[in-house]
Length: 155
Image 1 (cartoon, rainbow, N blue to C red):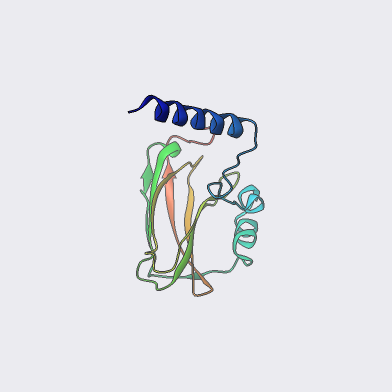
Image 2 (image 1 turned 90 degrees about the horizontal axis):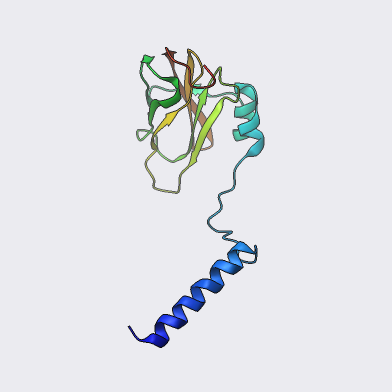
């Protein structure tokens, strides 16, 4: 590498770092928008209403919610939602009914994406875990009780 190229790249990188630290260079495309009101909601109904505009969802057998019947550690409870049998999945939300803030996560999907999510959630006690799928402007849900032996939310 030539010395001029090295100096030019070093100075350009340094300038970008200084601009970012000064707040002049903001990565607006990278920063995701989030629904603060929905994630701060204290009840299932409020969380669903703030997320989707309604708290009514139809029970669906097309949603495969996989969570352990007994979670040994509530801090890392594995949950998988498979809604690939439903066409046009727009989003999937996972809620834990007795958590201080029930809305655990929400995933938005682009056109043509399969409705499949696998994650780990934090649960403080035994409760129902609910998956809500928005597809075609309608809400569908599946839920399952998970018994927690060691709480993850302060337990």
